[in-house]
Length: 106
Image 1 (cartoon, rainbow, N blue to C red):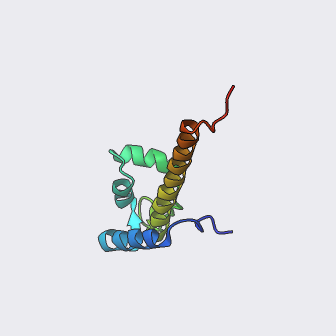
Image 2: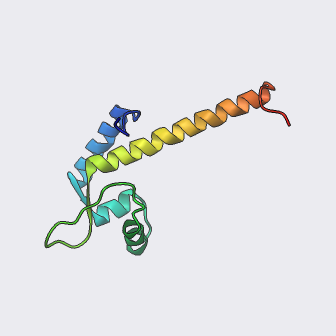
């Protein structure tokens, strides 16, 4: 099963289109740093080294730094948005259960 199956495809496509317009199909390290909102290049490099970006990054021979596809970055952000939306929905459901007295009691 595709791990991106539950992602809102239209949001992912819109994000990808915006990224491609602004940075091209392949984002370099500086573009990734800006998109992921790292304040410094050092913080970005540390996150990339530790595998914390959540997107596949790759090297290009005879070029410095890392690169990622706009599609992968768009899917990452759409996935994060969807998981946050689901968590918020679950919190709202739990809160409404508590208000209705349907929550667990000790």
